[in-house]
Image 1 (cartoon, one colour):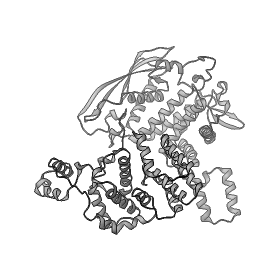
Image 2: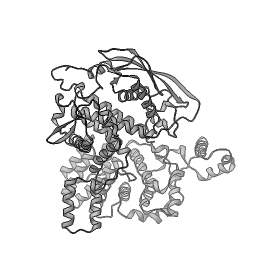
Image 3: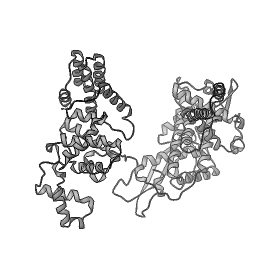
Image 4: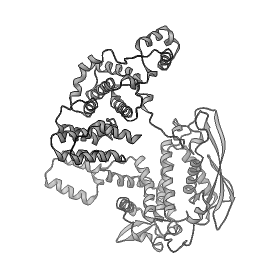
Length: 614
């Protein structure tokens, strides 16, 4: 939000502006206002032995619109505090007590194990004294961050947030603080690097063993290359190598020269790649197995420099890691392009605004927007509405226009993978969605519709308003279709109905809902459903509502019972029990049928579910 109020994304000159103000506390010690391109920080009460208070003033500006006009103040203050913490290398927070607690020099009690000032330089000193040069650099830093392309800005802010959190975690958990500091660079490396792994970058001991095996097995060059490509593109290798590669690309000679002046046991360039690998290994050990970092890194007397050596391995102290991460992020930011203006849909980033999926009743009847590529999605949403009509007597939308569109598309030819969804939707709508379920306010009466258009409506009204206006006219004049079906739906099903004779999840649920026998072998049906379960969380795949999933599971169990396969019957009925989580009475009903070895009819289950809903 901080970057948004800079105005770089705005197209209109008409803006709504407010004066924004916030309070922050810090161990930073400066007597005069610091004016940046986005906000001014003014001292109020400067203390040497406790947290000083500052006022943050900024101009909250936003393009005039019908939406929220003053939002995101807390995010603006938070992001500016992140810039202050990183840019001024001091601790900023809106809670005075929290600042003073973080900047303590003595333990609060006998259980207070980690004192932040003992593990990191400057950030928690009380006070942090500055100079004109640092203030000028901070102003330039803020201007640079605000000028970043939006995508890069978001990445940087998230990284600075992790940096700040890492410093705060020093109070409680050194392992988490260390790992979080690694995340700062890891997040940037995954979004903003050009790393391409090769075989030489693979773990040397494993690489040497594999090279030996390749030679012994006399594999072809093509096979070897294919195996190597699979291995080097593994996620684990990529993450570590990208982290190291990104860090190396953003470390300048300055880090080892003037920046290292006065640093105890500073990191040497020859040690750089090794300490990065060791740091990442410790991060991985903590993340995946909760293994603590090297214990020597937690002893204050041993970590007053950049690195320590243990068993001939160099390790970055938290102090050294913080200095390294700060340098890498600073260099990364300085290398990025600056944009005074940028085309960007900033409204979606306003805090408090989220994107929600629109209920299908508001769009599923819009035949003009339906294409064969969307048939699986439309069918899934149609089933969810049909399930609602079964359970809650929800009103089913009128989809005659949609069925007419399906007829037209099928006649023109569609890809085979879309046929089953389209025919199933068509068949179920005309078989189950009787006029009693339909909402008459959206009935499309083709002859009346065309008459009204021909009488002049189409010459004076935009196309998107045809349907609402005509439906309103028909409703007011009580022109209601009593038999809402396509005139050739029987011929259509006769021609394309054979598509549902192939075993698929669409044909299975369609036949179950129509109370028709499943003509396939039970093993084929069960395999088809299990395959559906594996894929249902993928994009662009059919999703059955829970009710219809249970229908399929119970039906499969019933067939196994009829074939006297008691083991599989119990397996599938128990599967249904676990898919009805939270519906105790329905679970009891199924368990009863497991014990009695009796067929469970779907209407019995539906009655139980409806009773539960009521």
